[in-house]
Image (tube, rainbow, N blue to C red; front, side):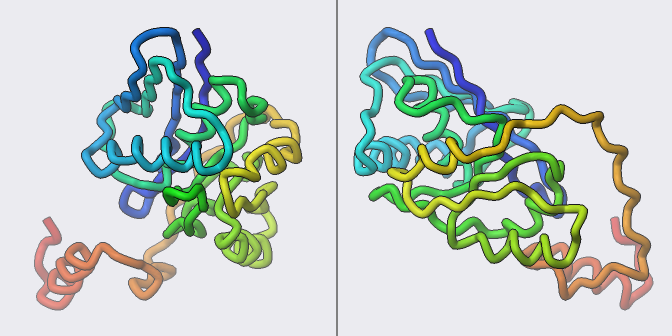
Length: 219
């Protein structure tokens, strides 16, 4: 039995939620199961991950593969967990070296291409700045923008265009640093909030606008 743990993250509203991807590969009837409150859209990732692994030149283990997404109490729908799931499967089956504590973000195409992550800038800004990150190569401008605007939020970042090139960024990852957990950042004051910075959440924004315009309670 081999268990591999991969770190990832998703946006939950405007907050960044760390996600743990645990992959167990063991002897048994070939099967691929995703558990941990994975919604239907995310359970479809099994077909994408299997096709991407094969088309990238790797082998999908003909064993019992179980993927657990933590925290299990949180519903998960984001396709950007495709890449960390694939990394976990490949590391657990000993086809690639175990990642050195990096955070993986990315959606996979059937041919193994790593597709752009929406909201990557917000996710990078909300992660611990000590965490190395592997994300789609097309999202590298987001990382550069964050580094240029906020020197304290620089992440060791590696871009990945195709799953077949996975070994290179893993090999180049810096060793993870153990540091005391930083204090929680103070919430921004009201004067700094600007709805123009928010993407999506159309109904919530409309509700807040009506509440402010009419002087109603937001609830």
